Image 1 (cartoon, rainbow over the protein chains, first blue to last red):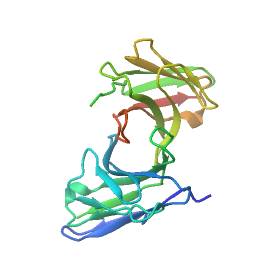
Image 2: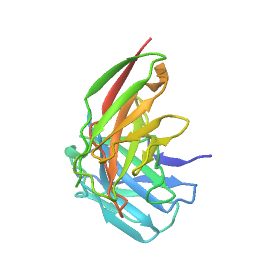
Image 3: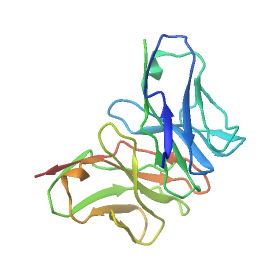
Image 4: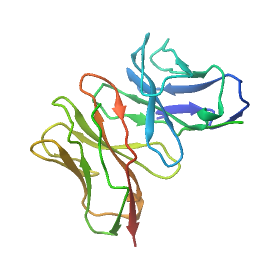
Length: 112
Length: 110
């Protein structure tokens, strides 16, 4: 079982560059979400989706875009990277709104 | 949004029970209480969740106060592998929004 797969695991960007963090799950989960975790902090919700074609904002959505064209994939786009977006990014999925979330291993992103 | 308050850190001896407290005095009637833990350099891992009644699973027990303003995660016999940051989270009723706090760092002593 692959579960939740995030790619890449590490990435270094320059300020102003754009990139997409990939997240895929093979559990047929309807619900997916993106979080960021800064050093010594808890996770903060960026965006989430309750099904294909449906997305909504979390606590810290500014600077990030998402789309959900399929059940399996939920990519996170940084349109113009800023040093403040240096963080570890986690993707999660769950079968239902109150069901346990399954997390990926994270993407460590540094922006210079 | 309802918030949770947890101690920054706790210590426990191996093989002894651990009680991790969480205060959530502004919880609403439809908020679920979730616990996750995060081992070093890993993504969070689900532990347990509940609404009103106490819950048990193979990993832990969750004791919820009658007024729901606090809860306690109970690890029955701590092992070295239980050393992690434990997050008490309220999931807003009717939404998919999980609000994480800073959690409790549990240290298990051999």
